[in-house]
Structures are given as structure tokens and as C-alpha cells.
Image 1 (cartoon, chains in turn orange, purple):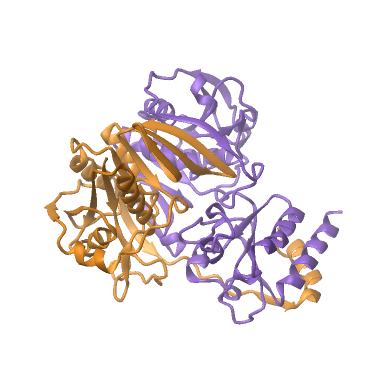
Image 2 (cartoon, helix red, strand yellow):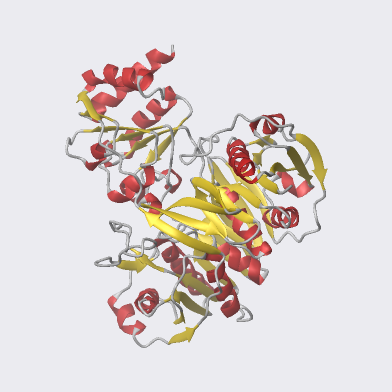
Length: 249
Length: 321
């Protein structure tokens, strides 16, 4: 089983966002960067599938600047076999990233190419299915359950108010959601081993772009409303406000 | 005259509510561009609710009928939309489980970009500018779609139905031949088809203040009394396994924009606030008067949720009678 995981370096989810001086990206001063949490489910799935198969190779790809080397090393410390940095300025343009990944992953003989369902910075939900289309591979997104046997994928994904079950043949592209598994933490031994694992750097050129970022701004602040009162005695007043003032019930 | 495609969704042969929001967003674009709206309906045989598409602003209703379209067919629907969308000005999807899966496939087939989870649209110089939440709603990104057609998904509960009724004349379109690489084998609705937090007009969420998973019964009772309400949860309680991830509101869960959001026993961590700050009205019930949730709430009650919530359920029930 040969498995690729595409990994993105993102700001930690507890980050307070400050808009950068360009007005189109965040100010990265003091921001802690981590592997995209949804990509960690993909890493865990890849390592577990290889362990279950008893043989194979797991390769982690990340597209971005040199800072993404640290993110790749985290994946290697978790247990991925080798890493590839697709060195570029990075991009928020899902289609251009998908094109660069598809060009790299094509003809490499991967049985599975795994992504997180989205990156918690851009919130695009795009790169996995776009890469799959460009490669002409089957794709199932937002998996919460995965079984691979006899060259067939059986998957469950969350839909509104339920779960959708689907199936496809390998090779395939899958994107992973929270609930699929519990990602392992890098062990001390893993961290030491990661330093010796192969990590290749390849420069890639992204295309001219399918979107143009015009700006980034903070959402309008919500002003604090009123404390209606304390304890259950305040409830009738609350209900009256929701009914007559807010008109939502 | 250029065309805006509005991609509808059906389940079990009935159009989903979000379909009408997609048509409303497409109508808004069409009016700005001087274009017409074609609503696309995938199905196998009869689909109910199509009569309403015209009333919401669809000039035409295009039905793509295929035995595989009784369920979601990613490859078949992507192939159909790539063909229909090739000459369109824009293709609009819902930012739903299906729309988020399908839109990027169609964009890739057409070689264009895609704007996800759009909450605001404007047309400038014939190009489409979209506003969309990033960092789970902690910031708003404005981008311009450079390709044609413009492909986008719109956030549920954002583009509420328009009142510009059009003819909505039904026409059948042919489905191109396709290879079904992915087969959807079925759907399971463990909660009897419960409303999803991302789409429900009212969300009642519980957090650690509930002390134990069984106490979510209080939240469920309030949601049932309110009607049309989904039960949400904070990351803290999802991470310890009290509730399914499907219910999680916040940065690694869902971002929601209901008319009413009731936060019970939720302190209001930054990643949770990011996920629900676009709700129209926020109510917080928490025993800690300094909890950050009160800084974004329109109405708050400081108190013991075990006393306040049952009383609230009771009062809401009275109102309903």
C-alpha cells in the first residue's frame, strides 16, 4: 500500500487573527503554526493502513515556504516514511494548489492520496476533490469512517442529519473529517527518527491564479447585549424579548 | 443572454430547503448581470418541490433524470454540470455536504477557481466578487473569481428566498455518458433525520457546564419545544465523546448562521465564538457572569442552567400552546 498525504501548515486554531499590513493576509507575528488538524486524521489513516497492510510506503507532501519543513517533520515524527516540500510562495488559490499537487502526484503509483477535508485557514474544502478530478481518480470527501479491503474503499461521510455510505476502487483520493480516528502524538523515538528520514525539496511554480484576493478584514464586532437577569426568574422576560423584540420565536 | 446555474439538492425525491437559497443567490447575481437563472434538478423520476423554484426566481427548471440520480452521484452530476456550465456566467451550489463535494469537481473540470461558503456577492465590471469567512469566521476574505463560469458555494441561512417570481418552466436536459467512479450506496439517519446545525434556523448548543452527557436531554427538550431547532455542542464536549462531531460548532466543527443561537453552559472559547458569531440573535445561559460568551450574546441569563433551562423549555411550550 503506497499512500500520499497532502499536508498544510496553518495557524493554530486558538490564534487571535490580526490583519497584516497588506490588508489581504494575516499578521503572522507571534502566531504559532501547526499541521492542519484535519490533515492529522489523514496522517493517522495513512500510517494505520500501512501498518495493517504490513508493507508499503507513506509519503507526506506539503506545498509552501521553507517553514513547512517543520510541519513535514511533525508528520515524519508521527510515523510517515518520507517527506516532500513543494517549495513555493504558498497560495490561498485552491485550483492552483491542486494543479501543482496533481502534476507532482501523477504517475507515482499511489494507491491512496489523502487530504484533510479543509484547511482551517482558507476554509476552501477544494484541494482534495480538485486534485482528484485533475488526476481522473475517484474521490470521496469528509470521511468519518474508512475501510480498505481487496482494492475497494468503503466510506462513510457526514451529510446533514445523517451519514452517506459510498464505495470506490483504488487508486482513490479521500479527504478526512474529525471522527475518522484519533491521531497519534509524535513519540520521542519518532521525533529522533524523523531527523534521519528523507525530506526532499522541489521548487514548484504556481499558475497565474483563478482567484484574486481583494482583501481581508475582521468581521463586525458584536456588541454585548443585555443581561436579562439572574436565575430562572429571568426566563419569562427573556421569552418575551425573544418573541417581541428579536422576533425569533 | 447569459445564464446562472443554480444547483439544487434533493433527498428521497424532495428538494431540500437549501435549494431555494441557492436559487435566491443565483437570482441576485442574475439581476446584477442581466442574466437568467436555470435551476438544475437531479433525480430519478419525480422530484417534489419543483413548482416552488419559479416562485423563488428560477426562469427555467432543468431536470437531469438518470437512475443513478436517485442518490447523490458525484461523477454523473459533475459531468452533467461541466457540460451545462461550460457556457454559463456562474454556477451556484449550496455550501452543504453535497455542494462542497460537487462544486470543486465541476470547477476543476471547467479549469476555473471556486469560492466556498460565500456570504456576500457583488458584481463589478462583469466579474464576481465574493465575501467569505476564513479562519472559521474570525476574518472575512473578499476575492474575485477570474475564470468563467464563476463557481461558488453559498452558506446556508444566508441568501434567504427572494420574492421575484419567474416562470420556472420545466425542461428536460440530457445526461452525458459518465463513469461512476464513486457509488453512493445509501444514507443512514441515526437521529431520524435530525436537523443539521449548519442548516437549522434555531440551534441550541450545550457545553461543559452540562457536567455529564446525559444532561444533554435538557438541551434536546428545549430544542424540541422551540421546534425547527438542532442540537449543537462545544468542542470540549465533542472531544470527550459526549456528542457526535456532526454537532460541533466552532473552528474544527461547523460554522453556523441561524436566526437564534442558544449557548447553554458554554464559556465561549475563541474558536467557538468564531463558529457562531454570525447568528442573528445569540442567547447565553451561564453561571459565570464573566464568561466571554456574554460579550457576544444579545441576551444573557446568569444562573444555574439546571434551573434556567427547564424553566425556559416550559415557558416556550406555554407560548406554543
